[in-house]
Image 1 (cartoon, helix red, strand yellow):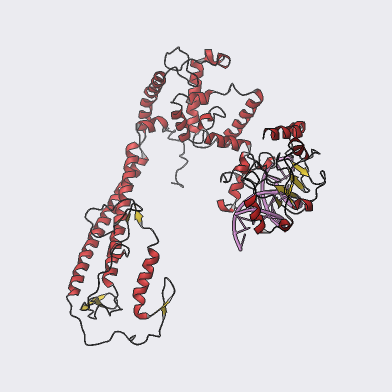
Image 2 (cartoon, chains in turn red, brown, orange):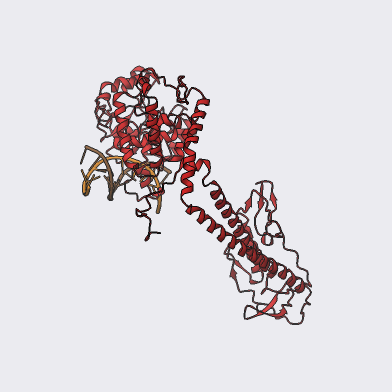
Length: 581
DNA sequence: CATTACGAATTT
DNA sequence: AAATTCGTAATG
């Protein structure tokens, strides 16, 4: 491996550095960037060679299984070009597989492949990178080449269909563009990179372009992460000492661009604070502001503290940081409270209205619930009464389907033809079979006070879940009771769909196909509605809680410190007025 | 000159 | 058959 590297280096050497601005890497013994011809890669040093420079044609290459350049072969006589056996020449998949099986672990997966047209290049898989394929645009070794997932953030990703894009640009994710071989303009844009880097690596973040934060939340996070000592650092350092002059220029430029971009966003407010703070600090500590770059020591920002700050901190101790923070609160808070009290709080009004609305809805839901409970009991009453009906034996008016066994219908679930006599039963079972493949489990048992027979709630120790089907229609955990021979159907008969006649169906239950399992269905109907009402109630409770927390948090310490309400001149027009609101 | 769009080779 | 991702023409 080591020798590979040096080999490569000597090969590329000076040209490499001179092509800085270009994005075309140089290849082959001729050191030219040309890649629009057949090329072959050395399986040892991974360098690419033009076929014509080393007198290897594409045809010849097809027969080659492992190829090593002259230099590598000179250095290491053990390396020898290996050829495919004649039979495998024509890309027989079977023999390909065989080959892979019998190749030594150090040999690459497969040897040659074409990319982008016959006249272009043949890429050999490098021996040093077992998984990643090398190609004209992929070295197979750099971090981007090894990456397999798209970032979903860059412009190329956003263009992709899978991320909802129009598929117009059709380039692979910027973060997967090869560092060495991809065209430079396709790689990650510098600013984007720094952005991402900051996101991924919050610790180093402040050492780079420390001025921009994506949100207040990020600011806060940083503030906390640094033990609330670095906020002013981050903001008042226009010069970062460790940048070389060139670098610094670059960073500053980036910063300006970003500032313009984000000028109008919401953190304007917080930036103004930062700037205020900055000025304060400047004037307070102006005497040492210059010396800092040289010595690297700062004075602790703690109130009336003259000690040196700890490295990477603005304070000499946590105590000083706390003191300054406390002072800040003392200074800012009373003013904010006053400001707060000066103007009426619209949000509070809204909150109150919302609460009222929620209460009303809760009331309605409760009413509905009692209604449903009533129907629940009513139904149970009907069912009990129905059971007492006597079976009407005489007529065999069991619909006309007695002998018509030729008639076939198809199951709605499995689509098999079935006999009408067993159809209902079959379809029920069949459906249950499919349905049981779906999970209705929840981690928690149901705890609704005063509600009987809602969910099945059978515990499944394997998945550690409780069954959340309606208890009445859970085929998995409850069997339908066996119907006795003398049992009556008992379904309340109706006229015009809804009007009860007061009579009950008196066909033997086993034979009644008209009212198959009617109790179960009616119970399910009621229970489902009850569940819905409970959900509604739950949702309303949640809403209530949210509104209440919002109301209590309003004008809390943190909120007051972070935000402020400005009373504009009452005579100037409120921009939101009239039309909009 | 950079960026965008798109046909098409290649891979999945 | 669809997705990926080249190279390059068109466009700004």
